[in-house]
Amino acid sequence: MDIQFHHIFPLQVRFFDADVFGHINNSIYFQYYDTAKMDYFHAIGVDVDKNHATVTAHIDADFLQQIHTTDKHIEVQTAVTHIGHKSFTLVQRLIDSETKEVKCVGTSIIVAYDLEKEQSVEVWPDWIAAIEKFEGRSLR
Image (cartoon, rainbow, N blue to C red; front, side, top):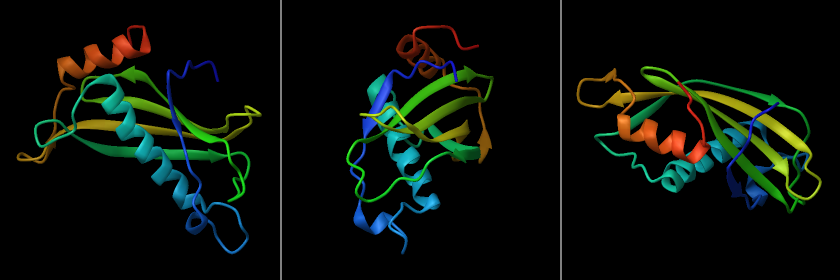
């Protein structure tokens, strides 16, 4: 994967995230990604609110290595890799920050959304500018 990840969100792996085998349940990975996504928005200086809502239209993950409750150095790395007219692509990965071992790679399609009309809208120009500034390149 040739993506530069400028956003890093350290995680504290919680005991209750694990299943009976002591590894983090696969459904929890999506919670980690969602938490890091909100931190990404905050880091780039945009607000998710009633005027700037987003919905996840698609999400997938490739689980490469297990994460255990004893793992101490797990982080989520996040990057936007493409901005379309009404959506953008968010790539995230869970890694061990010490060994650099990639544990999981997730991709989401995030849609700009009008809550009142209940329909997608064009990605807001201020979001496009903030994302491209943060990522350091044009994404359209």
